[in-house]
Length: 248
Length: 248
Image (cartoon, rainbow over all chains, first blue to last red; front, side, top):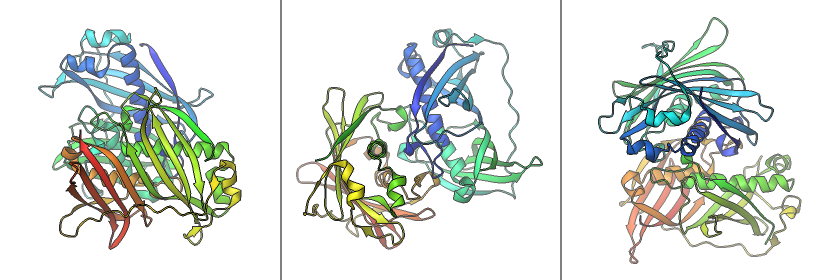
């Protein structure tokens, strides 16, 4: 495990939805901001990384929610580079309340993409050493995501907007969450709260694309509800997710 | 003039567009957050106001930009209730850099809407007294906004999303800016910077609505560029704006 880095954050109304809870895109935005602050403090900001011809991408998130942060609550957002192997870096994020209780835990898988070839590059010591995380041989395997069944899903189109593009000229990862959550609609979102999210990013979506956000709602044997998601750009699946919910 | 209230704010990457400058929706979000903090400090938060059967709405913004805030810059966001009359409250916001230079000035016109009739209510002393602003007779008149010419505009549809609805169950005012700016497209937005914005909100847009964001780009005699905007819901104009730009 590497060095832990954290900052306090007061949750703004504008980071919350109609229920007064912090939105998933806002949670990821503050989490990623904290990891960028840590990288800058360690002399490994995005300019440095890009000067080596690569840029960070995120391939997976596994998120568990004990309780969603609320408007005007002061939370602590912290992060730690846990371990890495030849291709992947495993980094955790924690959102905690003022008493130190864990509200949300985000396990993220980062990789480096070669800026010329757009393919995954190996993780170099020059980039990773300052974080103090452990090198491991093992590549983590995550449970397979349940697919949207062909005849049982529904979908809605979303166009990539100017503000969806971040300063790396990519569609920011948090935007996929907007497409995935929004398609479930007001009635569902205002009456359910997430317990866990597993999401995998497969292909980059670009400015000017229109995506289809496919979803299916499944009641599980345990009495919870699972939603299955695919973001498709034409015939290509760009992102898949499974979310487990309970009634709010 | 009333009491001034301000807080420091570190501009996050996630509040910035691809040019690394703070987006207009993000600027408004932090500004409104500050005025809500002032209201809470004065015992006039939204719960108190709504307990009187009314809620704040914003009818106009006049915004002037000297320089847009940049990612990771610490700015001071402050606000002051300037004056009010029977129906309108005039409140200014300032975004300043660390040296105290004014970056952005926002003049906002607030009114109270009756929660039952959805019509404008009179401004009561009970609500406004703690702000210490001056009562005036005069109702300010703002310059008429130039309209999109019927044959010279273009438009794009936007659907109201779940995250566009704020905790007052309204489409947040900052969302209109997303529709107005986004329709101009990547090439325009990445090569122009705004000098001023005048915007008027006329009708509420609701969740489930699809709006059309109409616009027209006009070169002015002074060598600047003016964009004219209308957000329409069916045949109804819900919001109008004029923005003056210069090449970035």
